[in-house]
Image (cartoon, rainbow, N blue to C red; front, side, top):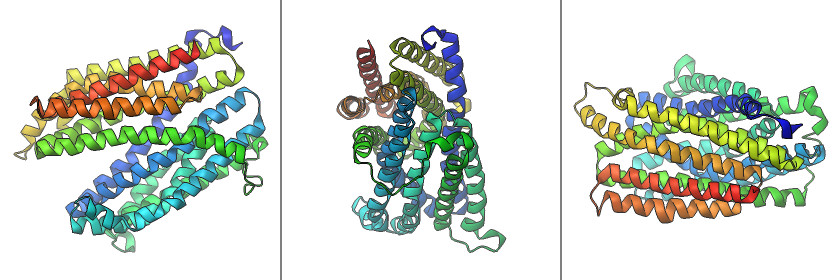
Length: 448
């Protein structure tokens, strides 16, 4: 039956599955934005501490989330084989590894001040950041467990509950931030630490909501997800580890690319760094569209791979690539048509430095048009490869593209050749295009 599906039917199923995943990705980003905005209202030094602490938390989280992301194609493939037992085994060991990772990395958060000081950060900012991270670090294991449950439910095509729980988390986060950052409604004024308490609370509440849904929904009881949870399953754990660690390290390589680009932009100047931040924020919003489509592609490709239906697999992959290209082209048109108006949304134009930031930011947003095509294709290629459970070679292809090609190109174009911030971004585009081309080649070679 799947072999006779038309491309229109494939596109429809991709969108039904992918739109809630896009929404939940945007909502997840909104959690970060609300923390940044509300702590920014509280004070400049606490804001710097939270930005530092949250970005450090995210880097560690990206590595651990590889195990959670590995669960998605493994569960989808097991469903394709009608192997309900394997669904439980893979998800459970994903939960085990995520909890173990969250516990193992907590000392990094507890002793974060000496680490930040060694990296040249301001002592006052480092002290507040450590207070933030000691609390936020308690949420690492719950955050990773939530990601496992999201992967599990998404693979079961339960993407709408993932969206609604994430949207509810944003509302809860805003309420607790308002109470604890500023000391409203009779609560203590905790500043940056209040934002950390809000983050951990949201993660625990999300875990309970998704866990109860997964356990009690009648249609999902047949998987017995938490039955004899304490029993180890070493073969399944090895498989989750084998697939998940390269996913986490790939995410680290990509995240490190953008951290390095911010560092180099800071060498150029403060105005350029501010413009860089705005352009990246805009690009990140549109990137979430590709992330949602990529996750949907992973699920569908893994399901067809489990069924052994290579015709449907290839057709679904072509449709996913076309949809991602359509989103990229729409973003390109938007960025080229109104770059100044987009950048102006992030600025107070009455301030004297805003005009310079507007000029630099608009130029970067034009380059972000190229960025969209490259970034959308590389994340879609990674999603397709995860669908066929190929993660180790893609890790090396991504690392080479980002760090041996992208970063050196950025440096050479920005500094020796003198193109500044625009040259730096052009180097990022080169690295992302190399990743997109090599990863896409890898996928189509595998499924030919």
